[in-house]
Image 1: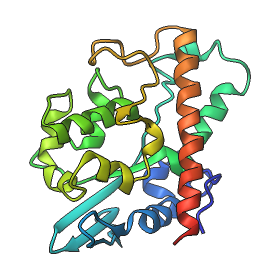
Image 2 (image 1 turned 90 degrees about the horizontal axis):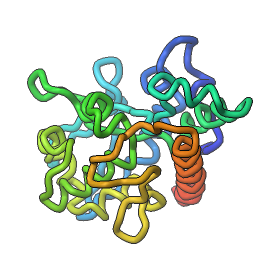
Image 3 (image 1 turned 60 degrees about the vertical axis):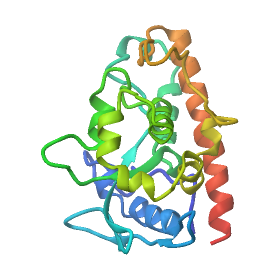
Image 4 (image 1 turned 180 degrees about the vertical axis):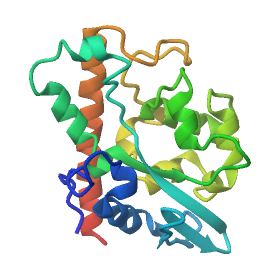
Length: 230
């Protein structure tokens, strides 16, 4: 059973990261993303702990996957703005991000000493950990276009090749609610990565927060419907 209201902080030891320590999140990831690829073969995930989080081994290759909470709330980068929110607003946004719709898996193995996707999307100032901007980079990867994450996505080209197309990637991970047609729905104004990636004022933060929460709610509903079919 997949409970899309479950907060993965609940079964995580205090001070620890649910991505690594929530057994429920680990079980949900394994159940949801072990499924057929576009070519009809199975992408089954096994428990890779303690050496890795999840692992797939088949004729397709070996893939080591890690979990990532993908909806940043910017408690530090936008600290002064967050302080202006009404009581309980930030906490509701933060906690919602730890339901399954706020989570994703990416390749977790390092290529040489270079950053993983998790690391690169967090540290690049034009991405700032935002999921909408990350998915736009993934779209451009499939289209053969440059983006701030081109180099790191190219290092994991074998992972993205599993899904064949951008649409295949979106369908596999139930991300349709992040799109308007075939375009990414951005949570803030977007100008080819030239705009600041972190909200600079309260109105922009509220738009970012409300759009992000809408995506989480709609993706949770989509995941719940899919889980009922398993």
